[in-house]
Length: 137
Figure 1 (cartoon, rainbow, N blue to C red):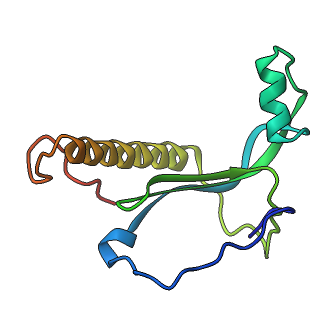
Figure 2 (cartoon, rainbow, N blue to C red):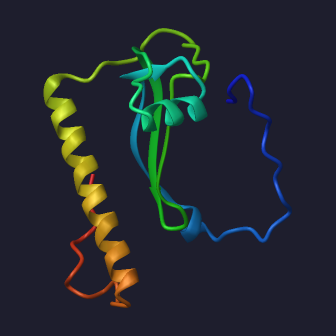
């Protein structure tokens, strides 16, 4: 999936990561999140914001993809500029209770992930009691 002005990124020939490096935990995935969208270029948005001129924005649905991995940390792709096309009908919709449970699971995943980062940065063993057990599903 590419935006209007994006070119596909070339793939190199290796070295290839191990399974442990590429294992991911899925966070939020949605095309229904509402965020502010600005009509000007990102460069113009930053320049105008620094001069105190608030660029005009509108609320739009965006594509939001979030996942966690040992190799890349927390990864988020969030854009109103990518074309999203629904294929088929909506398969399900979460109830309010399911949304609450999903938010709780995502929070637990983020907490566990942040403890792993802290352990790595402080050279502690991941087997120490400082990090909680991984979230279970």
